Length: 335
Image (tube, rainbow, N blue to C red; front, side):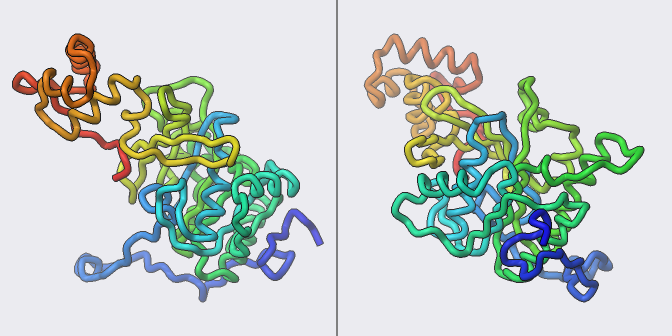
């Protein structure tokens, strides 16, 4: 038996190819048929954050991507709350921890779980063939044995993308690599999370920070970038995709529990200084508020409020409106 070709719960050490009879997705309609068709809503593994399809989760080294991935895997497998705030339904999860050992996984799970029992619906594996070399079939076989599966996490994607086709451009190679995972996600209607890295050079566009070409984000259904933040938050999770609104979530990491927590409010509330955050919260709740009202509502010094509001307006964090201030339309927050 080859360890590299075995995933617990598949029932066989040899991955089996998908059979034609298993095809469930229709791919062509006439226009009137398509307009008359009724489709189910996307299945969310983590509502508002991870939907069915391929989700590319990228971040710099040591930012906590693996802690986040394992925490989400445990939460979805057990049901309850993910990130201590998002309600999730329970269902089988496959977590391919390809850079870890069994001992390290056990240590991390003990820290995250505390006194809670480990869910039997979470399958963990530390090795798997590359997607184009048997990995796709191995994952598909696991999903076949768990028809109510909700999520598959591949940590990290580089370990399973496999070699590029000879002569393919970098873009085409990246697009094809994600395509192997997308075929499984679309076939079974589940969420697949590909953990990946970002470039060393930063960018104003978080999508441009994903390591590789635009083919990776272009082929994925959603892209999530975890970045270190300033202020009260330890990280900001930037999310955009076909079935998810572009959003920013402020997160805090608790090292003693190995857990990421979703913070209440918009990311801006937690990534700017305390004074600006207090003004922003008050103005959001009281559009058009004048400096005197902000002073009374926040307890801040009048001169500090006037100066800070002026600077926030110059930084486009506030809008001047008839002697008062309002908050620009925001995509951030919990949605």
